[in-house]
Length: 136
Image 1 (cartoon, helix red, strand yellow):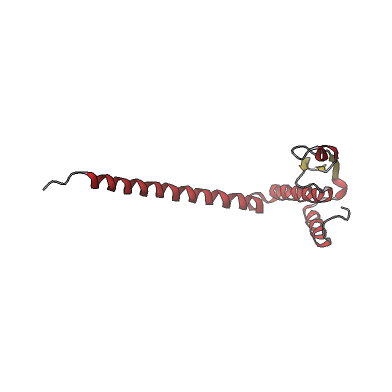
Image 2 (cartoon, rainbow, N blue to C red):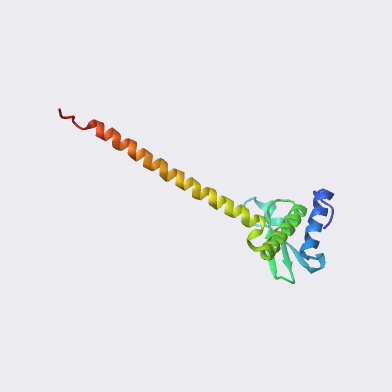
């Protein structure tokens, strides 16, 4: 990867991660595509979208997170590393753990919401009981 907006530390860290996963720069087919989406004429005229293909695994990544070409090249490589790491490690990968954590939080949230709803219903029924005529 060429010099750009990234610092040398991030670039070196990414290169080390790629070598541990067995991804060589020579194995990558990189193309630059014109972006799409909102942004007016500028996005439609510049080639800031990165298409990356890892020949041995057949993985294809298209990245257009930012307007910067060099940052998109970096993010595409990070995404490729994450996908290959996920394939190798299975459920132990960071991404999978984050997804599971969010899923657990949502489950917990819905339990709390259900309990709150039942509590509200109970309070409402108590109010209705107070309206009833008391017989002596």
